[in-house]
Length: 237
Image 1 (cartoon, rainbow, N blue to C red):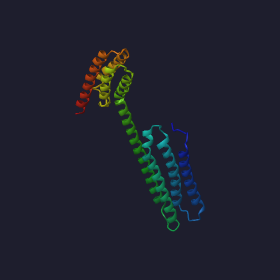
Image 2: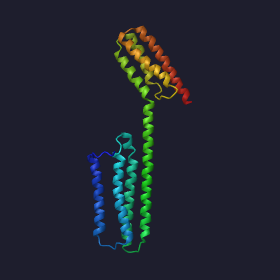
Image 3: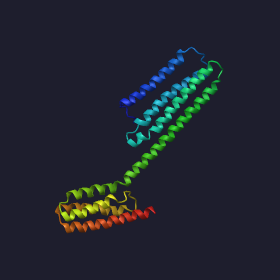
Image 4: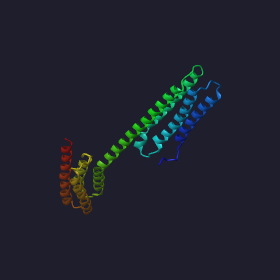
């Protein structure tokens, strides 16, 4: 659902569109020039274009709350703005030319319909692109969740450790985690479950403070992490 809470910037954009709409409508209706069928058709389509552009602006920036969505909402907004500007220019030109020449109504209708169709296609394509980028972004977040979890946990374990020898070994393990391949795949899930279990055990051992036990489990974790990284390399080849 579109967010109806408007900030100052959104209100300013709406105000600009409303001003343009009112000025154009008043100018068309008040200025005494010969209004032919083509002029009225271009006038109606220009009103539609400005209103549509305002709707597209809201759709681009307020329909979704994520930062990625808002960043990639700019191309959608640009489509709407360009459509409104071009249709406004076409409307003004047809009104001016129509004052002196008999412009066929179908010329205005055809040009306006083409612009409307092009704008609709542009919004659809750019919105689909935004959706694709959001899915890729979400996928990357999911694929790196495990390693991020490991990195956070091992850093906390290092902080908790009060054993001097154990802390040195844990610091080396922490560095290995920080530089590990961040992306999970189907081939690494099994060993990552083992690493997760060993990290839980390591946290319990650190509390007891036995250096030999810490070193032994750190060695197992180091071997498991190295194996995971080798799997990552092999599956990328």
